[in-house]
Amino acid sequence: MRDPIAALVRQEGWRAEGAAARVHYEGGSDRYAVEFYAETPRVLYWSVPTDDEGETAAPVPRDGVPDPLRRRIREDLDEAGVDPDVERREL
Image 1 (cartoon, rainbow, N blue to C red):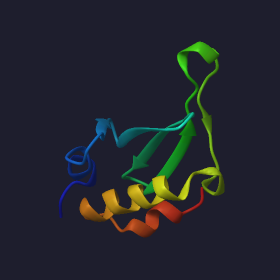
Image 2: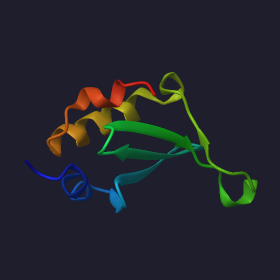
Image 3: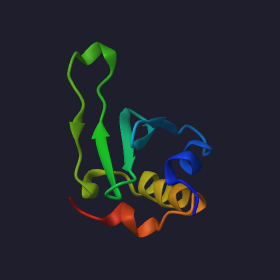
């Protein structure tokens, strides 16, 4: 079986960070960091403020994440050989 982190980093924008893979997304005025944790397997969404805002990232519930971004994450997971339904798992 392929390592899911290694498979995700071959997708556009993803990078490895220890036991996780992360991708950043910007759409309009929204900025998100998306993390996939291979050991659990779970997807976390974070709202990322601009540098000018001086705030820290904050977790975002799935129902607050735009559908196009959630679809893209499921597609990337599927392409990496990860069950795309893990994107829907709650913590």
